[in-house]
Length: 433
Image (cartoon, rainbow, N blue to C red; front, top):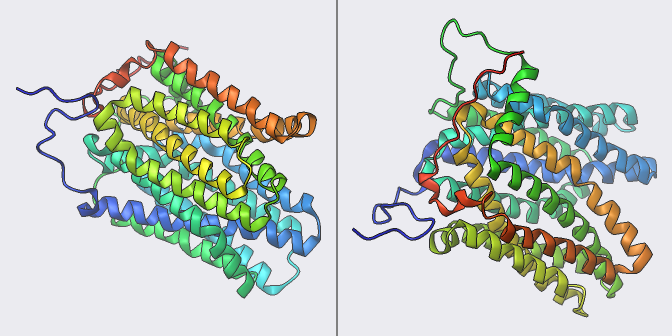
């Protein structure tokens, strides 16, 4: 019998049916896509409105920070709730809270001269709800998608979000130019589609009930169990730490790319074109990720993608024209997307359903809690040593992360196993207090 290639399922001759023919998957994918588009629109409109209404850049930044802090504040709790109460209920109720918050913003803006504190409070409420929703997303995806198609579903979700980012900002600007309240109403309506999609999904979304008589630990104990499971796995410990550092460096490079385009003589239009090219590269990489995993194996894809990312950001400091910066960034993002496909797909396969919400939320909390460091350090380096030098320093930091992949063979050994054959981690024994 012929042996399968690294990363392939044993029976490649019998391909599973397309996910687009799965009604539950289409409801989940489209509902979340519309919600993400609405969020992308309001993310532009919120600071823009505050800037024009108050004339204060600080107020414009504050409302964005409040949303981010709210999300961070409930991420870990959302992951724990996803593993102990109905995920369908969370996905039905929480988006409605977000919809009401955004509808209230739209109404206040429509009436004119809305109180700044009221808008700040509604942004915080929206962020708190978003954190709870994020904690449910990964375990729900696992319930909907067959194990051999997890990589494909992950790539399609990433590609969807890249396209949404590509069109969300210009759409937000267009809606804002029509009337200042319209982007917020658009966002409010978009959240309703998550609820509708969740109600239409036929599969049980979990979590499975505990056997009668079993005493359920408290919420804090549940969150600690998520951390315990991560610490048990060399792969999860390494990739969550490595991914958080990568995200921090990437956030710094994102800031420097804008500064560099301006330094090369480009204006807002050039920044927009370069951003669009980078997002197009991310979309190409997301689509190519599962195919590359089947052909090359997950470990090779991870390592090669990391080095492509390093090379692109080293080169971006040397090219002279803004459009050339955009093309180099396009190549870099084409490399970065398959890294995310690999790490997220194997995490979903490794972690048992009963722990997936907590583990995924813990990782997101770690990523988002560290990402502010990147732009802060990047800005300091650019002011102190020049933007080109700052880019090269962060590219060197990324090179160290790529080298660490070669040194972590034991931690990444699971990547040599085809995705569909990855065994779940065993459940934890109850912690004795």
